Length: 296
Image 1 (cartoon, rainbow, N blue to C red):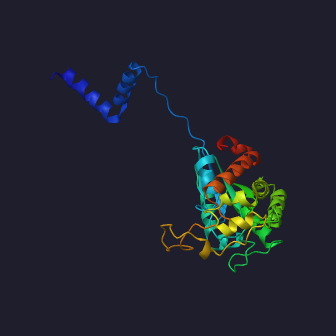
Image 2: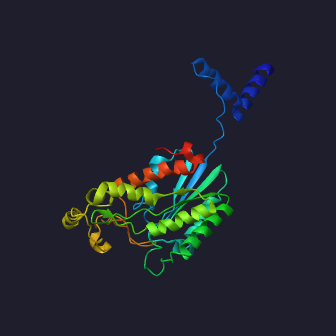
Image 3: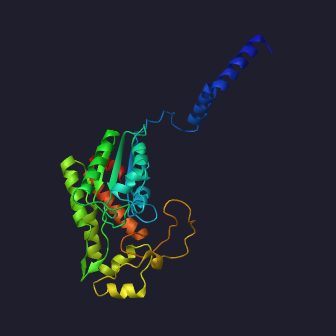
């Protein structure tokens, strides 16, 4: 090999080692095949949505996973941290709120929004859950709003999803007083509000006591369906009686085994899709910055 040929071969090898030569040759080859000249991708301006709440939001029993899967575009990260049986008090005490705030602080996102929905278990009589409605519940919400803002994220409050029990053809919306407290906190602190209680109550009332049974995780039994036809639903069966035994999960872990059941609170796929759609619609109205990232 002549010295000139040796130098040319060495230069070519060096270019291939850095990728420069390969890239140039690939560019020429692809251009010759009719492809356009390559350019660099634009920097992604990604947003993030973190959802915190109770079982009506949680995976397998609430609406939020369906919301993330079907109503949020791929340029926005969507994380469902809803957990069954939690209130504004227990969610913080067990450490779930710290996890949510850690997610709110993750760098790299243009904006992070934290959607907060509680009320069902604040209303409960279970010792580790319940809160006092007039003072403690709104105070807990205020503290959550302040924490989110200090983390550099945007808080969004949601009123609690309605239950679906009826009396004489009218929805028995026992969570309306709790929803009113959420609305008051949102107004006082100038926080965007998704009034899911009002929207879900209107939708369920329109469906009526029989048709709204399709929103549950499983079908009602014959007695429950017959009674709903009178306009007044039966009291929800205890979970142990209402469960289906065929869910392949283990009893290990927080709160034990998950099993599907019929009741007037939790959601199957049809219910999750209905209420996820309502949240998507009203979130786009309440938070204009998210409008381009929310699919109807």
